[in-house]
Length: 411
Image 1 (tube, one colour):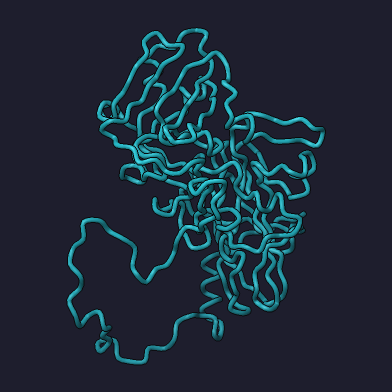
Image 2 (image 1 turned 180 degrees about the vertical axis):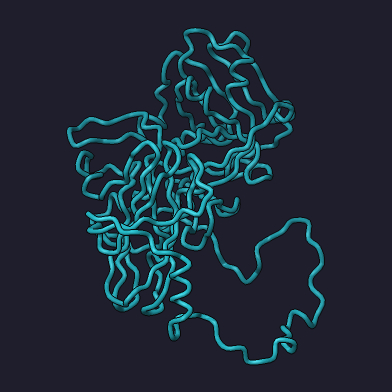
C-alpha cells in the first residue's frame, strides 16, 4: 500500500474557486449598500431563561425501538450532522437499562465503603466542596457499531445510525482517588464495585489502581450540571473505558478484594471467541474512526470539490494520524487534524477532495500514539464468534456511486 502526500488546503481552495462552477456562491444581484434582509425590518425576540437551538434546525438524536421495557435501549448521536469535537449535551447518546430515574440531589447520597478504614457518606453539597478537575473525553458504548459486526449485509443507515453510540464532552468533577485516600483503602482492597441508583441497579467492577488514578466523579457536563439521561446528579467517569463502566446515577462504591462478577459484567459485555471461550473485562475502547461527511444516506451534488471530514478516537490515548483511502484500502492519504488533539477525546480530521464523479470506496484508518491501528473488517472478525459485536472498531467503508448515492459497504 502507498501513502500519498496530503493535498494543500490553500492550493485546493485556490483551484476550487478558480474552476468554472466550482464555487457555491453566485454573483451579487444588488448593490451592497442596498442589501437589506427581512430580519433587519422588525424587532427581534426578547430574552429567554435558557437558550435553545434555532427553530429552523432539526438535528435530533436517533431513537432506537425500546427493548424489553420502555426504558431499556438507547438513542444515538447524529454524527453526520455535528461538527468539531464536542457533542452538545442534548445530543449526547443515551444507553439505559431501566429508564432514567428522577433523583433529587438534596436527598441523594454517595457511599464509599467496603475494604476501607473509614466508610464515608457524601451529600451532593459535600462533594461540591471538594477541588474539581475538568477533562475533555469521549464516552462510547461497548456495543457501538455493532450493526456492522452482526449484520451479514451492510445496514443502510446514517453514520450516526451505525456509530452514534459515541459522544464527547467536557466533564467536571472530583477525582475519585482523593476520596479513596480520605477513606483509607485497606491493603487487601484491589477492586471497586460501582453501583447505579437506577431501577436496574447497574453495577460494574473496576480495578482499584486504575480507578484511583483515572476515575472522576462527574458533576458537570459541558459547563452545566449533568443532564438526567447522563447520570444526574453524579456519575463515574473512566476516560477511554467501555461506556458501561462509566456508571450513571452513582450512589455507592464498594472496595473489594476482587471483581464482584455482577450480572452486567457476566451476562453482557464479554467477547465470545471462536473457540467457545469468552474474554472478560475488556475495559479500554480500541482505536477507531469514521468519516461523517460524506457518509451513509447522503446524496452527493455531482463531480466537484468537497471536504472529507470525520472523527477519530482511542481509549489508549491521543490519535497519532488518520489516513483516507478512496479505493477501498489500496492506497492511503494522510488527513489533516487541525486540533486540538487530546488523549481519549474525539479528534476531528479533514481532507480536501475533488471527486470526478466515478464510483469510490471511501475509508478512514486511524492510528493512536501507542501504535494501535484500526483493523479491517476481516481482521476484526477472524478470532471472534459470529455473535460477537462488542468493541467493534473495524474500518468503515462508504460506497459513493456514479448516481451520487452514499451507501454502507463491506470490503
